[in-house]
Amino acid sequence: MLEHQLMELIYQGVDPRTGELLNSPRDPMLDKRRAAYLQILRRLARPVKVSRPTKAHASQLNDDSADKGATKKPANQGARWTEVDDRLLHEVWHSSEAPALKQVAEKFARNEGGISARLVKLGIVLDREAAREESARREQARFSTLAGGRK
Image 1: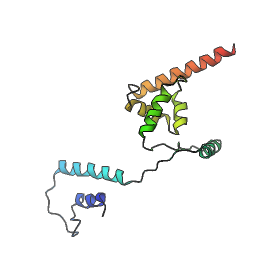
Image 2: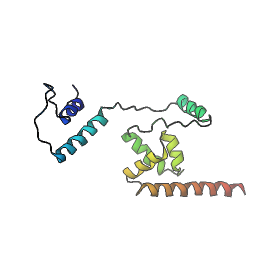
Image 3: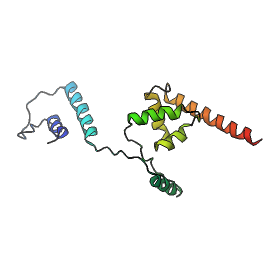
Image 4: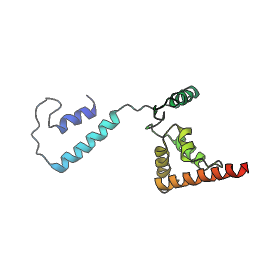
C-alpha cells in the first residue's frame, strides 16, 4: 500500500492494518495538518510528464495553431524546471538580444506567466509585474529599432 493511501485511511480514522475505526480524539489543528500532508502526498503521487519539444513537435504545434479557435498549451507547461533550464533562462534573459517574455516563452515551450514566475524565483527580477514591464520595454525598444531602421 502506498504512503498516500495509508495516510488517507488514517485521515479517515481507519486502521490501515485491520480496517477498524481508530479510537482517536478529534483535534481540529491536527486534522488540518493531516489534511495538508495528505494533499502534498496526493500531489507527489501524480506522475510528472517532462518532455522536450522536438523540431517535428514544434512544427506540429505551429500547424495546429493555424486552426482558428484551437488553443494548445505549450509543451513544457507545468513541467519541472531543471538546473540546466534555469541557467539557460538566465543566459537568454541577459543576452544581447534582450528577448521579451513572448520570445522566451516560445523558446522554452512554456507560457509567459511561467517564465515570469521563474525569473522571480531565480531573483532575476523583483516580481512578475517587473518582468512584464521589462518585457514591454524590450518589445518597445525592438519596435523602435525596426521602425527607425526603415526610414
